[in-house]
Image (tube, rainbow, N blue to C red):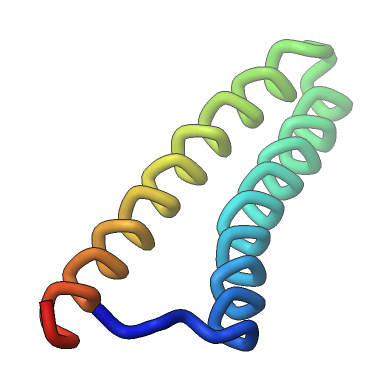
Length: 76
């Protein structure tokens, strides 16, 4: 398995941040907008955050799976 460099760690951190922040922010904003339109506060914000958390967890799982596969083919 190859040694991870500082640049590689920064790249992974950026990917994890994007995978977590974008869906959660999007789910919260979409929930807020829909709650204001429909008057259902805070129901749709909570649903949006729940769905976003699930999407983020799947994204992190896929990132880890891809990293493990790459690690095994790099010389493991």
